[in-house]
Length: 356
Ligand SMILES: Cc1ncc(COP(=O)(O)O)c(C=O)c1O
Image 1: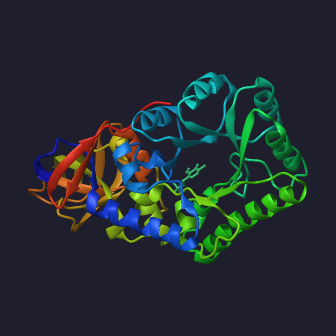
Image 2 (image 1 turned 120 degrees about the vertical axis):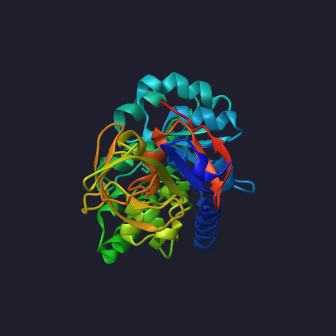
Image 3 (image 1 turned 90 degrees about the horizontal axis):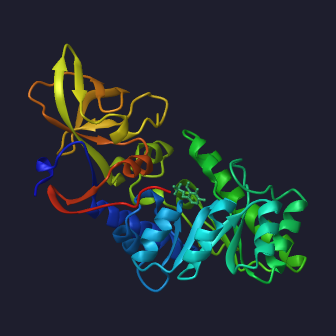
């Protein structure tokens, strides 16, 4: 089948570009002397996960238990669920953890105490807030070392060390120096915390960090043992705006049909459910519109409703476009199937894990 014959709207990954992106990040991890535990939430497809983890270490990061189950069924045996554990899902974690090494995250004393009391054998990571201010314990809070000690001392818990994610690296557009600073802080806060804990007798087997932007710019990772970038497989306009990739590195695109053209307006069948409403950067467009062959078109995609895209532009005869997305993870997460292409040839399609 040819790219031009796919039903629209559809999400398409260029496998040549995916391979190149994977190779680059794998080489970076090797050069930096850390293992790579890719975050597979970007695609949720075991086939891509296998491409990211060749060789003996098949460790991955997931964002949902649904992903963990799908990848476990596909043969992955070392999985970190990188969200603070909600206790009502403990039974499911224990059940899945009976078959694979499943790591969970803890970022509060209550959950730590409940896990220690549960007597269940669990692999645990402590989540640190390295400035992102989403989940995680503040490493400068003296109570953070007490929390690490509870996890370390509990006989039933297999303490892995610390995890941090510098999500605030995404707010550094136009300021590469700040991105560099955030990457260094992510590393330094975690390594320093691990050292302080170790000096008090709490051993840290692993220090795990990483977002795609920080992994792209960091040049030295002494004291860190693993990185967990995810978006790098596909990249997107957001990463390109940060200077982390070029337009040619964006592997995921959405093909849309032109449903009609009316006085300078073009109606597409790629709406919010095909592209997400992630606004991307400040230009207010929901993607960069190209021809199916990849040439930029003078079309601005400024408005989305559920199943319609409304673009400004007029190109008589145009029946299909190819859109580079603002945020590839969200786009891939909304499509029931992702097509793989090499050039204009469709070489396969995959059904990603869905749900939570
Ligand atoms: C805990 C954690 N680790 C790793 C990642 C991967 O980051 P990125 O998508 O920037 O590569 C994420 C993404 O949200 C995350 O939440």
